[in-house]
Every structure is written in C-alpha cells, then in structure tokens.
Length: 112
Length: 115
Image 1 (cartoon, helix red, strand yellow):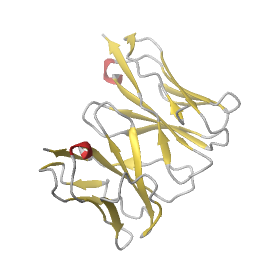
Image 2: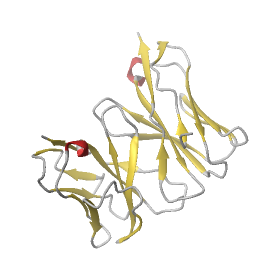
Image 3: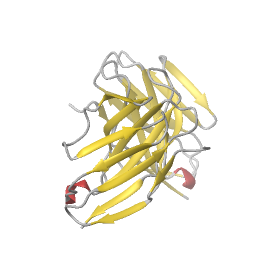
Image 4: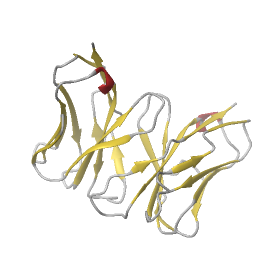
C-alpha cells in the first residue's frame, strides 16, 4: 500500500462545476495535510493546508479531513479552465515527521 | 530572497559526469528539502536539512548522491557518475522550520537530462 494514494485521473469537469479531488493515506498518526497545485512544467504551489477533522474553506477551495477514515479531499467550487492542473496531496506522517510524503497527483481538466 | 532559487534551470550532461545543483532558500527558512520528480511521477524525497545538519538522508538513491548546506542557507546536491536513470526534475523547497504545520515553498527546479 502506498503511503499517500490519489487517483491519477484525469478528472474532467465543465466550467462552473464542483471538482472533487480525493486522497487516502496509510499512517493513522499523520498530523498535517496539504494540497499543492502543479501546472505542467512548473513546480508545486501550496494552496491549502488542514490539520483538524472537518472542513476548511479558502475562497473557492475547501479542504476536508477525516482522520478516522484516513481521508482528505479538496473541493473546488465554480471550477475555471485556469484550475486545470495536477493536484498533489501531501501528508506529514507520524514517523519521519519532518518531511512531507506526496501522492502522485490527480490531473484536473476543466472544459469551457 | 523572496523565493526559493535554484540553478541551473536546465542541465544536460553526459553519462558518467558529475553534476552540482544549487538551491538558495527563502531568507530565514531553517529547513530545506530536496525532492526529485521523474516524468509523470510523484515527488520522491531525497534529503532534508535543519540548519546545516541532515537528519534524514534516507531518500538518497545511492552513494553517488550527496548534499551539503553551508551557513544555514545555500545547499548543493551533487550527483557523481551520472546515469540515465538520474534524469528528472530536482526540486528544492524550504520552510520556516521543521516539525510544524508549515508547508513548503518550492523552487522552480533543475531539469537534469543525462545523455
């Protein structure tokens, strides 16, 4: 089992729809969770972080965390073509806690 | 500096040559991380520094890889006797400190091609 798992996609949504990106992780003791956006040929950019169970909203983005299910998700409301990118889930685990472990990313395509 | 700076942005080298990749973190950031990303793959952890110390070198793929950090600032990743499988984008990131809820800020990466 991979430490951090994401569906590679692509996830295709029409402009204006809600995009839902999911991530599961193996270490039940994981402490903090991050979502990065990576445009093709560019480096990852931090867009959201979440540490406690529940929802955290920032503009059109909502991160959701369920530690009991070892599941974290990112919702993008009113998706725009400019949101088309690969979204990486990163987890700071309880062991080796000084580094983030990244999933392989989900590619999102938003069509006009 | 305002962001994480990496150089060179692109490097083409012949198999068997040594290469040095440089990272200049955000000023005041004590933690520095090296990852690499192969085409279509996720980010693979290589090594991290807290100050000038490297507590976790577990991700270095072989003894051909080494890294150092001086003055709590600039870091150099050295790959000796490069192989074609070393071709990847090498990403450096920094954060204010370790063991906290801070995410990383990444540099723009060095694309290494071994021919």
